[in-house]
Length: 252
Image (tube, rainbow, N blue to C red; front, side):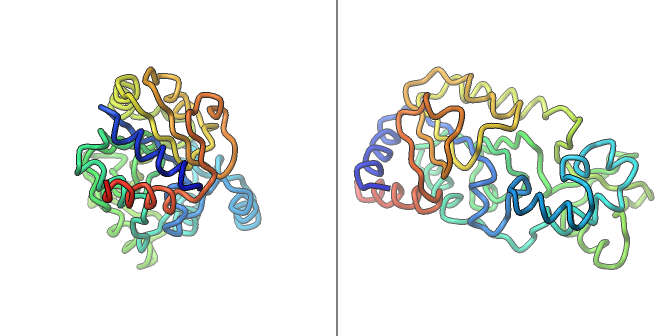
């Protein structure tokens, strides 16, 4: 990223009356969480399970093969030791300083909250909480991992029924509240920052179409369908980019 790009980014952020962040898997890869849709992850999933991730992560597959679902989740989805990276921390700082209205995330890792962000809309749900398929009980991720570590193939509630992660599986609808609040936030924002997403996973990717503001800043290593809408495109790592902008903001 050139110094000029960083300065433009910082100025856009400072001048904005309302900025919203929309991020995808690329935001968390710097925390050691791989994108399960990447080519390497797809190959590893096929070699290990003989099935594509999209099939394993479907609601119907969870219902009929919960043991295999949890084998996959333990190997590819659960990252309990992952910590927020520079991007998560910068966003939390911006919100604290009144520069950011909120974060819309396609990620399910809870790292934005762990970094200190308060307004976080998780359009694909979260792995931080699990719910019983039979009653109203819930359980945290560490309880689920504890059961798996003890040899339980499918973590269960105290009532004996299976625990299901609060994530949106293939075949399920996105959470109404998170989506409605995200659409409202994007439609009212003056600036939209889009990072680490291919904008190819719908319906979440369609949120960009609700934007009616003045500037879109796009940080992604590869092209996206929304490039033509962006006022500023940066092809650099997200953590490095947001850290540089954060430093400029602190100096101003």
